[in-house]
Image (cartoon, rainbow, N blue to C red; front, top):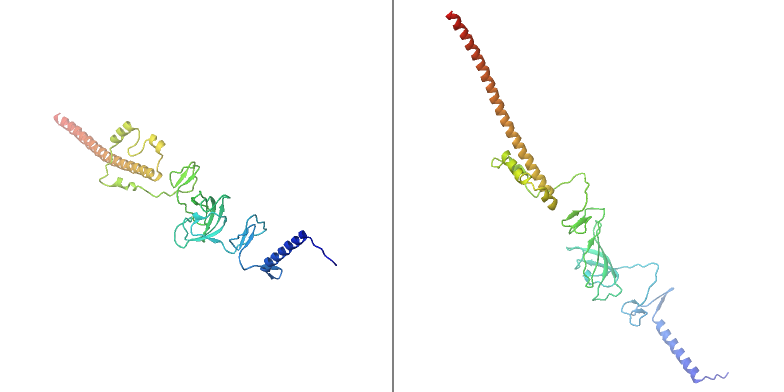
Length: 296
């Protein structure tokens, strides 16, 4: 059989042979293991000819399941910019500061992120027997405020102010609305008013209290209605002021009782005196009668 090949056919055959040689060389780097193939000599790229990891894919990956043996380590949560699973031990910018703090979390990055452009959404779970989870969003510098997820198991701790019904709390707990509770315990920030019962306490006379009310329209040491409407009231302080007034009222009642007792004693003495004077008047009248009879 005579085979005649043109120059074009020879070139095509040469390219095909070279391709087969390259393919054979490439596949020769893979080793079979049953129905599987493995490659231990470097990195594998899909969609890239310069892979920088064991498997470097430029494009989408479709998978029914994904299992990772280990998360990525981070020493600073503010430096993350790629999506992934992370763990940290005493890392900078963790949700909590202290010793022996492990956190596991997820970083969800913006599609335009890079090492100097770090818009993220982050979730971090603390290694603790009590469920503790935080989340935050970050700015381009990777900085953000961690917020704690409140749960129904164990004690809760919130660092900062909490508003219920208001977005601008001015105290550790600010409630814009009603509070329904079986019991409220208030720690005192002012002393209890037992000083009212001390000997040196300056108890105003009822006349002084009356003059004060006429001039100011409210009791001494009690804020006016206008002040309470503007500033509100401090429950612990107000209860102590009201108790002060109750103890002052008790002193007034005791003093009035002493006065009533003294008046009753004086009234009794007057009744005894009147009785004595009546007896004496009767005796005088009898003497007059006897003197008159003797004169006859």
